[in-house]
Length: 150
Image (cartoon, rainbow, N blue to C red; front, side, top):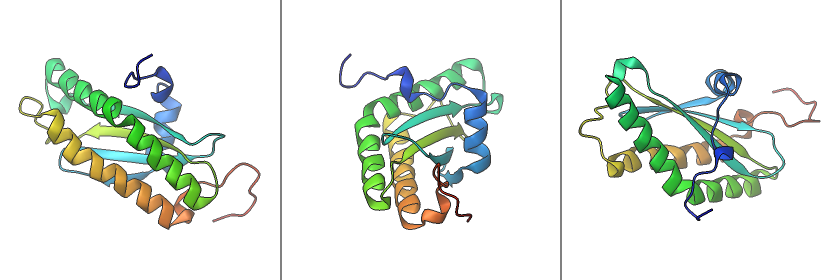
């Protein structure tokens, strides 16, 4: 596999995994996207991502374009995101597995959207996610074996 290939292990594929991100995760917004981030307990630091593009964005052609752009963003930035997860693990003292669900807003304009625009919107949001979860550990889930309540 090439260094920039996108492994299936990096994708959130099951509905319950999406629901956990929606219900327990934190929300971060950009102009065209809403990002739900959830730090789950795990063995090794890393990340997974999922995406949702509703019919409100437009026709199937437009929705698929948005999905392709999001997927390409995560493919190109996967090493940077993994490094952020590893730094978060070092700062908090426990492995951080970050799950991201990127939801396209109705205001997303796929016909004029470029990969550079997606990068300019999503990369600052993901940096904010890492900083927020590192600064306020109460916003991270209790790890297995941790009996303290928040």
